[in-house]
Image (cartoon, rainbow, N blue to C red; front, side):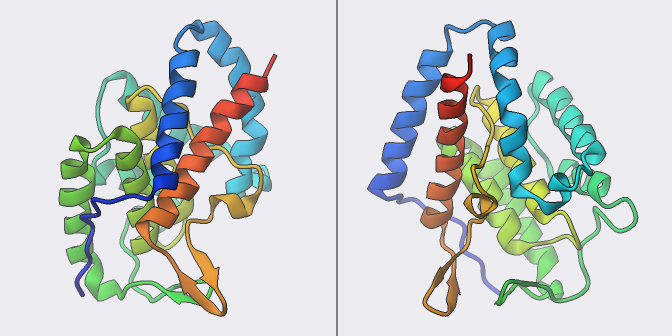
Length: 222
């Protein structure tokens, strides 16, 4: 199986979202740490909407995973594959962190064969976790999220793991995390007629919109 991860072009909509986020981010640079923390309390409700697991109040592992990435961010460390496996294991202690051995479907979309996973993970490490660090951070974060959930390497927790690696890269570069008004806002695949589709720019728009949503929520916070 061949997987192409070297996207170079994004749409005008994606570019406009990047510009909007940069303006928001500049405006927020004047806020103190205490002001940011106070305003961020509004985000908890919207952060849960991406996951049915979190909506059921099963948030202990989510808190642990966020503490883990916070320590890494404070140390200035970018995510590695071993880090993502550790995060996933927090979500699924019995089988998490190991590559799946069965075929899975996301809706009607069949993910890649388990036999292809080792090769695809090597590509992900090289082209996304390492080489993409030269991209604009918002694009790097978008790629890391999109390709991880597209490969769907783990038995469970792929969405939560992909959201956290995105948050990690965002925070490492001084941006606020993802947040969603509705669960569907977190989906980075789409539907055209009866067919499932997903491409990087579509996923990029969804991811950047979720980042912009966070800034808009924080701007409204008292």
